[in-house]
Image 1 (tube, rainbow over the protein chains, first blue to last red):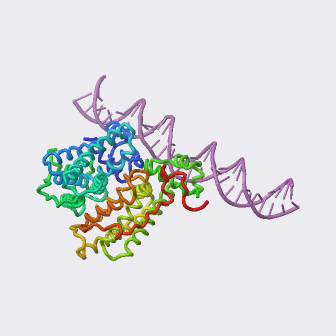
Image 2 (spheres, each protein chain N blue to C red):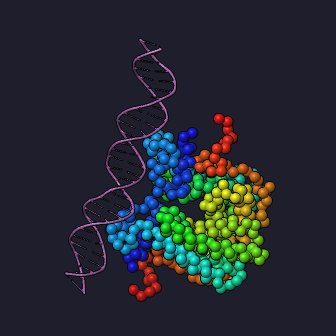
Image 3 (spheres, rainbow over the protein chains, first blue to last red):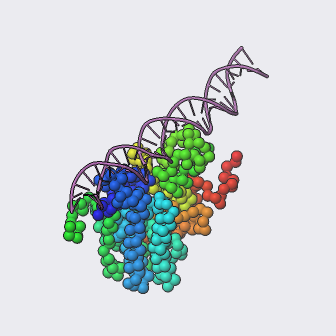
Length: 220
Length: 220
DNA sequence: CGCTCCCAATCGATCGATTGACAGACATTG
DNA sequence: CAATGTCTGTCAATCGATCGATTGGGAGCG
C-alpha cells in the first residue's frame, strides 16, 4: 500500500522536525515519489497528519475499552489502561509523539473531531480514577491532577523510548504499572492480573532499523 | 524594555502555533511593531527563541542547585527539585512548553548548547535518584525509567496549568511532591521539609489576563 | 483506445531577512 | 538664536527562496 509508505515517511519527518517545518517536497523525497504524486495517494499534507492521528487515537480508544471491560476492579482497570497506553507509545513512539503534539497544526474541523476523541479517551481514565477514589480503593486528594499527571507520565514514553533500544516493551509497561499503582496509592497490580495484551504496531509507524527487511507476518 | 515585550509576544505565539508556523510579521504585529524593527531589538526569529529557552533553562538549573544544596537527604532533595520544577512550569507554562518542545527548531550551535544545559539539569535529578536508591531510601527497580517518568510528569504541568485558573501553584506543587514521593517509594515529604521557595516569573512569560495592569513591584 | 501511475513545470502566496529613507531627539557649531 | 551633524527608532518596500497545491501531459499496460 503506497499510502502507508507515505504515512510512515511523514510520521518520521513530522516527529523529527515538526509538521509546519516539513515541506511536501521533502515528504515526497522521503517516500520516494514526486510531491504531486503524493496528492494522488494521500490528498494533501493536512490529510496525512489527520489520518495518522485518527489511526492512533482510534487504537487508543479501542485499547481503553478493552482494558475496562474485562474486570470491574478499579486497580486492575487502571493497570490495563496504563499497560495499553505505554505499549502503544513504546511500539509507536513517533506516531504517538506526532499525535500528541501536532493537533494545533490542523484546521478547526479535524481539530475538533480529534480533540473529541482524545477527550473520550481521557474520560475513560477519569471514570476509573473517580470510581477507584469513591470506593476508597485509591488514596487521592485531587482526581483531576492525578489523571493529568498519570497521562503526561505515560505520554512521555513516546519522547524517549525507541524500539531498537536496550529496553523491551513489556518491562517498561511493568515499570509504569508500578508507578501508576503507587501514584494512586494501591499495591502493585501484577502482570498476570493486568493481562498481557500484545501491543499493536500501527501501519503509519516507521519501521525501526533493526526490523528492516524482516517478514512482516502476512504472506507477500 | 522592548526586548521583553517581543519575547512575551513570541512565547505566546510559539506556544500556541509552534515556532515554525509563526511568521516574523505575525510576531511584529503581536508586539506592536514592524517586522523590521523586530530585528533591531531581537536580532531575528531564531535568536528570540534561543534567548527564551536559555532564560528558562538557566532558571531551572539555578533552582536545582538551590534544591540540592541545603539538605543531604535524598527525599528532601527530590521534593525540592519537584517543587521548583512544578513551580516554574506552573508560573511560566508557555515559556516552559516552548522550551520543552522547540529545541529541534534551532540550528545545531544553539541546539547543542541548550541540550547540554538540559542534560546538566536532568543529571541533578539522576544523581539524587541514584543516591536515594543506593542508600536504600528509595525503592526503585530501574533508575533511568524512574527519572524519565518523573520528569515527564512534571513537565506536563506546562501543558495544562494556567495561572488564571482555579488551582493555586502551591497546591499543585504539594500534589506533585506527593506523587514523586510515592513514585520513588518513600513517605510524603511535608511542605515544611521541602521548603516554600517562591517560584519566579520569567521576564519572557506573557502576563496572564487576570494580572494585566497591576503594579509589577518596582517603582516607575 | 482507455486507464493508472507518475512527474516537470507552474500557480499565487508567504517566508525570513535586508535595504534605504524618514522622523525626532540631542549635541555641536557659528 | 539658528543651522548643522549625528544617533536612535521606525517602517514601507523589496530581496531571493520556498511554501502548498494544481495543471497538463507522458509512460506503460491491457
